[in-house]
Length: 309
Image (cartoon, rainbow, N blue to C red; front, side):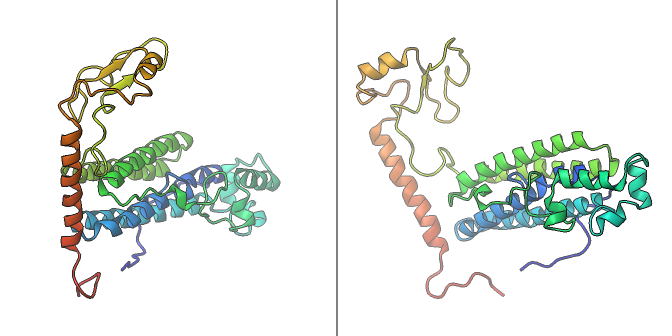
């Protein structure tokens, strides 16, 4: 159940109209890294977490709801940036506020042209209100959402989503001089940092959580690094021990020769690891049973009821 409170979570303000920045800001309204995408991603992920991980369900729903409030902040800011331009634009272009912005140097036709050039859909389709599209007018799309039904995978997707959204806000702040707008963008960017840490902490409470999913991977190939470019630069990604399995990286200096000698890697033997086919198969079965029991144990028998009243 959602209940709308008219006050914004953050006191969004705008000192003057700026139709061009309003268009750019649409990236965080209806863009692939925007607030609607984040809200819908966490909202849909929450359903699969409800039974086995009710605590994560609570977190995902809370953060999804906050993202909807951020969408409202972005939409309100866009609307304020279009003050005097939206609605009856030809008449509003003569208003004192718009002329101050233009410093009296451009005619009404010029500000109309700039608003339409920035995004024609502002005026043709929405009469000056924010639409669910990005700054190029491309409609919001459900393919932006990453919800895979495995909580360890979903939480990693969320870490990436929060990282991308933070970067977009960093870039957006370069394109406005309005101190109030910058203040709003800083708040929204900071909440991305907060959410990142929430998702990171939640992932750490699910053990084991590597590799993502259930199957443990083939020990013949989990620690090989193929030198597929000139130079052969070495680093912790191809020498020493791997970060999770603690296997010794095997640097394949000549991949073509190795592939041919092993008949397409089919005769390759595990090297630098204590894992073998038997231990991997046992781990696969054990984790499959554990994950399955988590869901079964949390699913009530008989009539299903989502909420208790």
